[in-house]
Image (cartoon, one colour):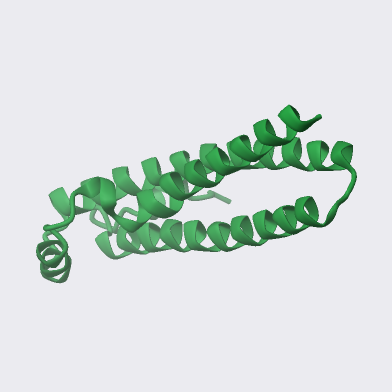
Length: 144
């Protein structure tokens, strides 16, 4: 039995790229980013509450270290996801000739690409929260 590769999966029977499937993949990746962002926010909320509620500085330091590591991993994941979405979308825009997508692109053209949701959710927000954890950790370490 022959298993389809990712490349074969997006090709139509004529060997042309199936743009509907390609667009679905972009939406899938975007949905994954949203789901991961929800998990990221919940985890950071729990860690922040734990750090605020603990009265033992050593435990707060451990929570801070775990938070910083978790945020570094999330930032890495966000950068990878943004890269995948950017590549898929650029290919789609260039070759798919989708009139609906053109309307959407026209309506958001006033916003530079770096201020689009993918970058805000996948890169800027994690970097900002990581920065907050680092400041908190340094402040706590100075008190010890």
